[in-house]
Length: 481
Image 1: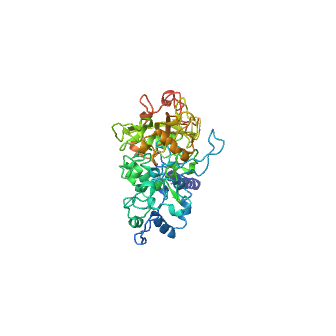
Image 2: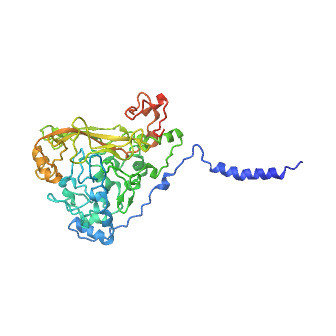
Image 3: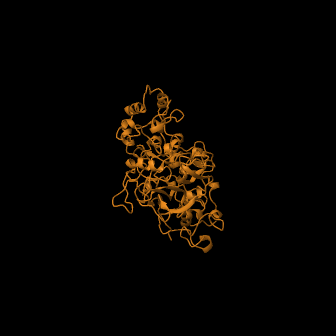
């Protein structure tokens, strides 16, 4: 038998050494491209405090002093967070203003309960501090005023009453012994009830997330995620900033799907191409408020009237409402920042809508993606002479919720808002955008092609800057072309 040349055997050997490993390691068409589980944060187990805490405690501040005796650096860390200051960490250069402007709950207007100024009795039940009174703000430089329990105690054992003080009847020793890492229960106590009720404000954050089904939120329902799995925390600074409290947000300040997932997470490359121009939430949050309806319209002008009351239609202290269940989002280009922001004292748009905030981005912005929003529309008070929005005293002493007197409520608010009131008021239309990022559905429930494309598609292509449905005119679904 004729022997094969040694060079041929050597070549075959080389090819086997090179090609086989490449074939094994080369990504297969259907192979997963990322491992999100590898990117989840690790939470250190919390020390059981039941044998450490002794008491007795007369006040919430007494509990805090005990906490700080073992955690002396926690106060300084926490007092620099927006949860404590209710103020943006920096000032923003906002068009129409000569000086940089700070934003935050402490002094910004919204189109729900409008403003916190002077309304400490109710608003500060969700501020994470003690020491608020009717007459004066809390001393935010005093570390003893930090409420450690609101984030760390078992909510079944701890609650807050007027001005943010511990609710009447709370056993502070039992609450302090229960402290642990924060859970959804802690976060939802405030964030699910912002704006005056369950799911009133956000649309995608409600009491349904305490124990959600996998179909409502895949992360929390199927895998029991806690809020801090995505809103990661470093020295009490919690990642994730809303545009309604910040004019601009750096990408590393915001929670991103790519904190765990890759930029090309799909096995189908057609879907990965969409990721260039479509936010993950646009397909994976197809609707919100499936369990608890959310408020989409609020008419303050009807408040104070003697009508039949119903939480979802009319309350004398607040006016008329429209709620919606199974809310289909509104879609807009969004680059993570704002293009418009109302600052107290700004003139209203007398000929149309005054935007409290508006997402920045367009089809020509390479950093923007199509994103889902809830829009909250309101008729809220303004000064007819000065032409700016007014924030009435509502929950404060002799405020509107007590006397149902708009004129008195505006006069009482003057020393708190520092906005002059002319004596003439009216009501004007405002809009506020709320990004939808929770209630992420399992992939099987994500939007399909026909949900956006075709005659029954949910996207308004012309409003987004396209001449029409890209599937019909052959354009590429990419704002970077």
